[in-house]
Image (cartoon, rainbow over all chains, first blue to last red; front, side, top):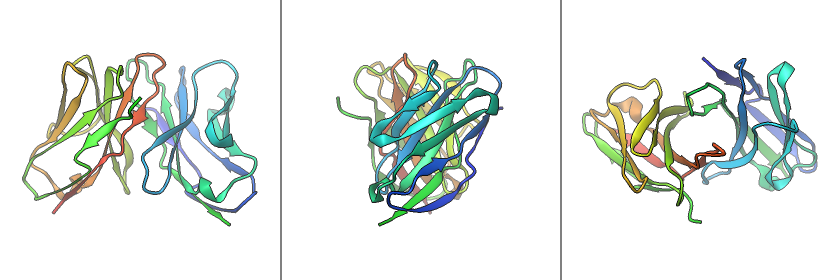
Length: 114
Length: 112
């Protein structure tokens, strides 16, 4: 079965600091990869996605992620975080042929201090 | 386009009762998936419906069931509620291609 690991459960940063959240998945086949964000009191929103092509993908609000196939990783980055980025971030994979369901990581709670 | 809507937003039920949750997908989306979110287990896939047929199912007991109507609206039902069913139930809709899911606000179910 496929699985997704997010190594950082709780990250605290100051505004303007750089962010990198790790995501590793276990599945040897073709994958679709996603990052979702859940702001306090709001629903899950799609931040960015990778289906194929350029392994560096850009999403909304200045976020980007890099797919490294050899490392089974899809890390999320942002050069300079803002207080408004305080949220929970989920990495998700859809890679099991014939099973169009997302497998989510456990989430990373990001707290940005002003 | 309007987003995914779910009703009701909050629900309190007693152990042993049953509950039905509703989801209206984004217009034009024919795939609807359901997820359960709890602090302990995180986000877990329940099932997916496409054109009124269940296409995929997660590892949940048979007490959890769903259906989809011809207008793509979906309902999920949980029978014989247990305390452990307390969770946020999320509905997501998706176009056929690309298969990216858009989530609704969820229904928070509390079982007492």
